[in-house]
Length: 405
Image (cartoon, rainbow, N blue to C red; front, top):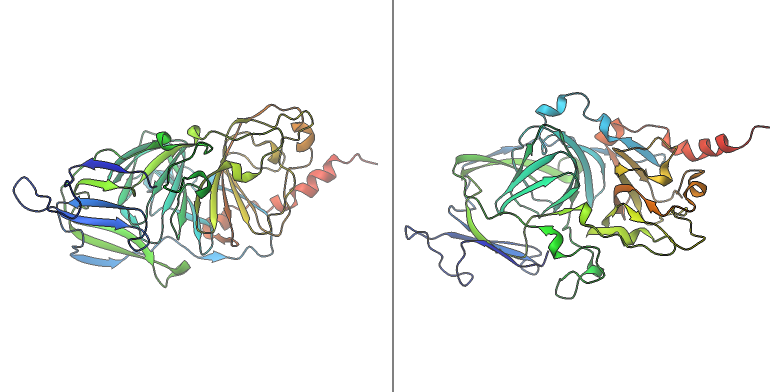
């Protein structure tokens, strides 16, 4: 996010001496993207950020996938993944279950009640949607207090941990990129400012608090990184001599932030608007959109629900998180569901949904969508909660609508 921020204690000029009250030097670290050619921030540490005293392998949660074969649209019932009270001993990092993945993005789900370990994703940025519950996300930059409806964007290698707050389970939908996650380029000026036609602006982004120095020794940090394991990933636990939250100040344009889906201003029109108007973020070979409560099409003959469409270049993943999604009525989909509509399958509203929508002025629906430009495979979590019936729902509904002879 090329939006400059400064927090805490920094030197007047970069790469110059910045001394502690006792006269010693703080250690300057550049965290930057694309080999010094893109956004970066400078962090000032009390300790040496490279120091380690031990390391051991971390066995990641199951990252294996299976092809979507035969090619089928699917309905995944995420609320069946963590039944009962088991979530109370699950954390937001090691408890994630993989739903869908390809070489560009992995989508996981977790219901958590425990504090997570300190964690760093070294493969790409993460965009985590808070379906329910609340948490404090502690980072080396400062903390973010987040709750239902928040997106939390965490740049690659940001050391952080999740601390659930309140008595309700923390339900997280984690979108992990093998790239960076940014606002759509068409919404940005040449210098990175969000433009007037964008559905949100910098005022809507919540920045971390002032950095908070934490004391500690021999602290474990769980690192997900590239490797030869399942999905081309591996895990390592680094033991560092001092707590990694030792930053006294930082400045730059690369940092974690939160954005509430309630602050997304929908773009509407006289006739049905295509999904790109709902886009909120993008990564390499995928986009993230959200469908929010909104006034719908106001041409006198408008059809408010989507037309049937065949995304020949995309797999479409819809996560239904609130309201009443008109186009899916009768399919079994409800809150906590995912629909997967793969490229090569023409999809659209359930039979009867078009007629029911005519004359509607407002849709009360809330959903997070990921469109990918390479086919997705099923992770173990997705396979475990596939309802096995969704692919046949259009034909079944059509048969049910026909009058009996």
